[in-house]
Image (cartoon, rainbow, N blue to C red; front, side, top):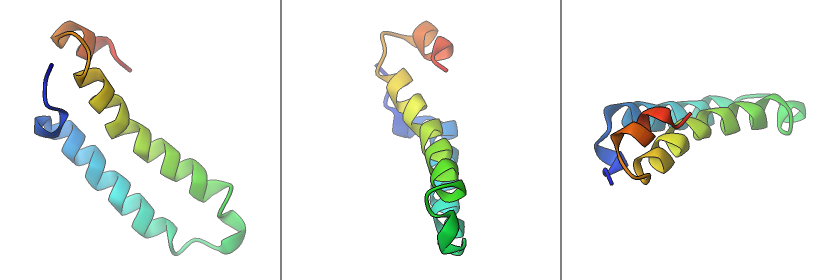
Length: 66
């Protein structure tokens, strides 16, 4: 098992999540449950998938995890 916080791409993905949430604050109210929600979920899935992949058995499984 590898600590996902030491993976550089996880850190970049986390920065992306923070940037998307910050940018989405300025979106119109009517987009709250449409575009805003979709962007936030898509951005959050990147570091989440990396963290889950790091919890797998080894490097081969990490490489296979989408």
